[in-house]
Image (cartoon, rainbow, N blue to C red; front, side, top):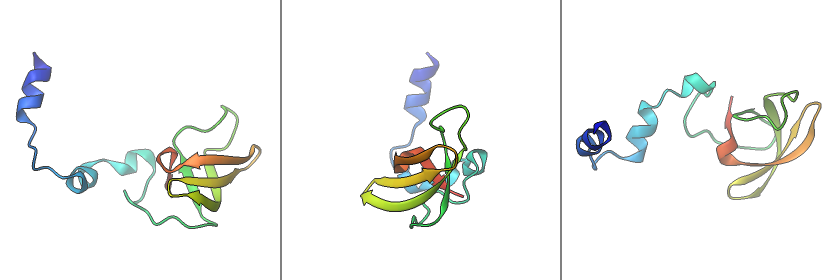
Length: 88
């Protein structure tokens, strides 16, 4: 019953940009919702590859529009999707 109420109160004119600005990005340690990504910057990982690896990665190069090759200390190189991290 609650779900039906929530759907009826949702306003379709709400844009993705306004939803992103209302999101609590600081909760995840992110400074801005849409950072400019570039090689040689540290990013915060949402889910580190192992329980013992660091939660940050160093971006090495962009492989495609949404994939980056990165290096994680004490883990090594990894291919990350842009939805797996945010700029710190």
